[in-house]
Image (cartoon, rainbow, N blue to C red; front, side, top):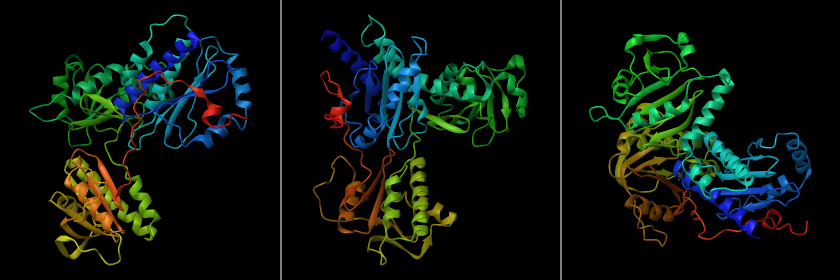
Length: 479
């Protein structure tokens, strides 16, 4: 009994550290675990935040419709060294990132967490879950452990998870003997992102390339070997970055020094930092891995996905081609407002006859499918009031005021734009309102409801949560 409580406490420490770490890297993140310590043990589930609720049919299919996976796993791990940790890829649950593993000392574990829609890449999060599994395997195989150590490691694992993924990608491309160290590179980028030059945030692309591949790069300007500044000299690197801002040029480094300036395409094996003012992105193989801002690495793309808006338009009575054009127009306007960091409101009027709005009505309406008109609309969005956009992607008016009667679901913690949109859409069925806040949250409001509102995040319990059997969780006790 004492040992059982000890194991539960060990799981809780790892779990809590994982939740806190992932929540700092992404939005608030829930975590769940399915595990069996021994091959003869029943599968148990540790899910205090109810992450896996709604996925019961898929879990039943994976774990109970065919039990052959257990025999196969027993056979596989019996042929591995005692401390070898075999990894499993994602179970492909909708809205969930999962990763797990198995070893001779811990038969099976699969970790789950939220797949946030604005995530740059799932791979650093998968590496995080993989490390949680490895720590679990290690802790359970030891007779003595300093309780809480693994949890503390997972709280601050962001940079290591990013490094692990970059190393994996580079190993696949150029082999495991790559000598460029990734951790110092990320430290350099993090410091550079916080360094202003004459009050301006850094802009431009800094590319790190292995010294043995520098011969493949075309340099517009190359610094003499004995005068190359070290990347540790952040102020010097920040000044050199001025030469590539607002251009397609890149500042090239071998990880230790700045080599020069190039216009060559970025190779897939290179680590690239794209700095865009007070934020930036780390890229590998042409894909963003994470963003960097506020002195830390984060998972977000910093762009609203607008998935719920796209679904509403597709489910409406609109012609599919018109709905696609309208979505592209709104997405462009929203992303422009996010970049410029100003609040605004867009009224999408799906009625055949437009609703009457108090504001500046245009004559004739502007066709927002034309780039010059779309650019003008993006500037008009900065003026107080909403843009009135028809289902045909024509801008009917700007500076429009939304009115309506007070409703119970208003949120006094939100601004006038948000609550006016709630009132207005309550009284107009065929109207969607998109509200962009200056601090980047985007609300999609339809029928008086914010349809992309985040569900309430279940906080961690303040007591020692007791795992339950997966059969009991899935209501399969009689199977």
